[in-house]
Image (spheres, rainbow, N blue to C red):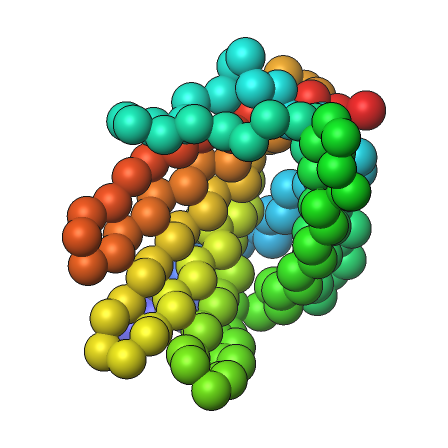
Length: 172
């Protein structure tokens, strides 16, 4: 091989490598996507929500306070019912996709929060096992309307069937 031919061959290899690197670096899958931030105070909109076939929602107003960090999400719910005390509840989940297990005298509950590939939807899966029966709920959280509307699609499955509900929340 002549020196001139070797020089062109080396330049051709460098050019090909550079072009391949440029293509790889410009593809979206290499860029880390920022997860949706659901943080905020959300008011349940019963008129826009769907309780599913044969279902209904409790009377009263529900407020959902979401606190999200890079590693966890906390859901604090308060339901205000006329003529009774507020009903409150709080759940915290890690955002690393790992399963968490809680056992008590009657059941075992496994939970896991997992992002969609584009990090726009967070799905929290809860499986409660009582005796040998599994009760599974997949709650998928997503934002629309430039972050002003939170949609929680809930798919529940149990030994006697299942149901899908859609909860719509407005940012306060």
